[in-house]
Length: 549
Image (cartoon, rainbow, N blue to C red; front, side):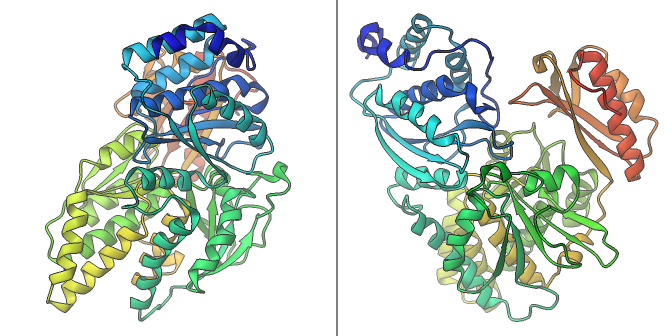
């Protein structure tokens, strides 16, 4: 293989189809690479090559490449690489993705490939296997051509699944590499596996009380809307899904004033649909791996049920089920610094569930969740899932087959259903919707009942555009800023002025912005705190654009 890669004649013609203009710097972060699509052709081509080598290194295991920019505007696009169990790309290869994306010429790129092949002892005896998916953006077909050119350079076998959600591709990769034990790598298997458990659970729910199965679905005008229309066929009227923001023909509407990120960041209802008091609104993002709920009351006050709320809802229910089942299982919750302070307090003090805090990014939450028998993780933005250790999943299924006590048996059957409707590979808006609706139905709760389990501290998210995000560094699970020197001390001084104040800053993993989170005793104070911290960041970093006000 080294000799084949070193032969520039064989690679040169392929690489030169997609030269690096050298005008932008790219970085593979927690959400892959994202940028305006006009600058991504060479990046996608090289990621196609890299993912092919990743598959060869893993002895022809299927790996995934998703073309998406998630909640970003429609003119952006990007790439996420998926490892064999459906998890995010191994962090040791993220640096390779960054280096390859920024290589300036053919010679440097060929040298990098030689180094990768040599370092990882990649054998030419293994043929790459790559699964590919894409969202609804108009630029996806153009970028797909670049990807295909890259993976074909290593004579890869590939499956192009077309327009699918990101969680679907994660699911397909895992299904293939488990030889069907997790399911089959197709949409029918995906919907059937997740939905059947939900429908069984729905039959067990005998008293809905305040629960309503009617959902106003905000599809962000993206692939989540497209696939929800398919999902409805499998639900057999167990839920009433009213489709909104489902125009995928006009990609300019994608994520525009709608979707999970818009609702979470702006703390307001999505546009593009009629807002009615007490109706249940569910918003997903542009690639359908995030989910948030919201509603307004009779006074038109807005209420958000984000990832923190989902985490507390699910954690409490799972703990109750295990208590009734009689199984001694360690259930834990993983959060990030973005989690509301009162949600953490509620989980630890009321639910008595242990909580761990990790840096922002699915890979960190997913990894930490594996420390528990049953790990639950949700970022505040609505991205999350449940993880069951293999031994625990086997224990639950085996015990449900032999349990004689009717009360324990019912709890065990419900646990089996929850496992079946969970996409354990990654956060999945469809899977998470089924789980949330199951718990709400079991509790007999409305969204108002759910919201009233605890009170959030008022908070605000904002961001500052900077020339170079890399001058910022964080520690303690991103709760403190270690660089630039002196910034954290200034933040501490600002926070001290506000009752129940808390604020932290962190550089984006995909763009030159610094994100600011602030919470305090009142919304007015949270807003003021966010502006003060943002202004300080702007001054420290020689911010770009308008100064925060």
